[in-house]
Image (cartoon, rainbow, N blue to C red; front, side, top):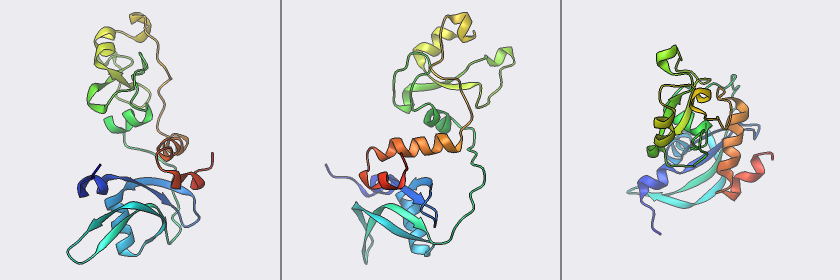
Length: 177
């Protein structure tokens, strides 16, 4: 299966701090920029590569920052993408794993009842369950949440890195299981 350059540049790359601590996952495009700027080095080489008019660049699988970065308490912006990531693209009512285009965001406590748009009140939800729940709370609709919604945390971030590592064996030794 042939992969286009755009797809290759979107591949996930594990980013390690200078101390080898995993701190992020970025797109291959960003990883290449960090390498070309001289702020990171390649720890694990990927199989894919991209071509410029003068050279061929291998897309890394794992990079490491050359200078240690103090990572503040990790917070993530409240966004649809981050809610879907936190909930692993799984409807929190029927437990179906779906593509992002087939998921909606549900306010556990409906907005019409003063429910806010917060980490603790938004969940990934399929259209069928969202319509079934309607303008009610899960209890009123006779529905149950798979997990209590919580803010994105360092634990969530590490867990997602481990899930992504299942598709890239080169990541495993950097993610302490």
